[in-house]
Length: 168
Image 1 (cartoon, rainbow, N blue to C red):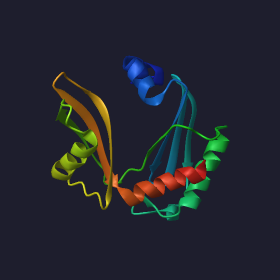
Image 2: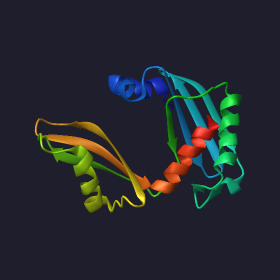
Image 3: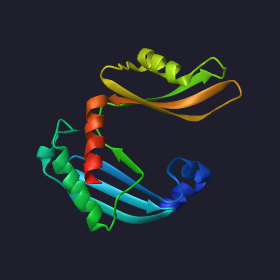
């Protein structure tokens, strides 16, 4: 079944635009020895690129040569006529990340910035010494708030962010 990006996005409507914005978005995925780029403006795909790279840039699925991989990403962006990007969604499969939907009671006293890491320690094995934690509200009810919680090892995430900054 073929489905266009606009057909996929349309049912999400304002939620998609609230998360990603109406203008442009770059999705980047590092899979094996391939960098995959997908650039969108609004509901339209403006660029799609698969670029192979030297396997020595990764070890165990993690970036070990940020400068080398940044050069590959930068060249792929230039090839597609894309300049510096403000919004990038990046993925690095094999990152040993975990996601959960967490519900918290809706009270004035409860602070998500304290409660979510505590719950992540209990339910996800989150360790603040070696992992990073991110969360976003995803709705709820009159009595409870729901959050999407994501944890990943800090070092590989920091290296990936460094790589993306070097790539522009």
